[in-house]
Length: 292
Image (cartoon, rainbow, N blue to C red):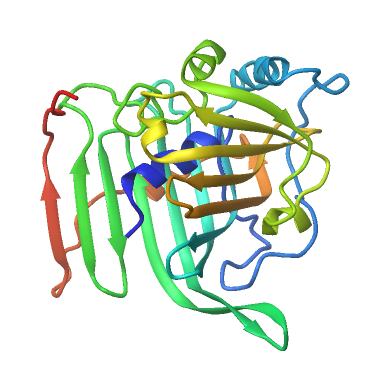
């Protein structure tokens, strides 16, 4: 199961929007080669930002009109000890839900496997694997369909709103957060392209990047060395993430065929417990966080 920190991390840096595959793309297929294909309204952008702070200003402004977001997701995780790369393919959906209980999302992975060498070239060895991560504003659900495992955690006190992306919360990351908070917790650098040793280097072009290094003493510094987020220059939609973790592990996410403000189906965030026989259900109610 994907860690809560990684879920927060992904949604945080899927930043001023979030994601799922376009109707014409089947999650059972590998994502298309080439750069990010964006089918959505375009943001008004004038010239290249001179500094990371200027890009943060643009992103903060763009986020004000965001209602929902969806895209395809291609995630790769590298284990530095075993030197193994896991691959996940699926969809991601995000809803701001300003009038309701707050931000909510669904990450639906549909294929999973490993990256293997074949004839001197990397190849994805994939199988169907339905792993779902759903947050409805109160409850976070991890659902593994094949194993019939269902874990449900309440993330807020009953009746209170919980922002899954809060920078000072238990899973800190800058997603749709004020520029001032990002700069308080991270050293930020403007970059022009993904690193050449990242698979994002061959998939992303015409992007701006923000490399964020968590400041000493913050929660983020306990988990990450750096996190670099890439945004499409024309739309300011997120296109990729490259996170280097403490200890050398690495997590890379490619977001493609994004759609902004195309509507959100509330059924995506249904956190009802399965009623069919055979499911292992683990329900965990709200617990106060222990003092640090």
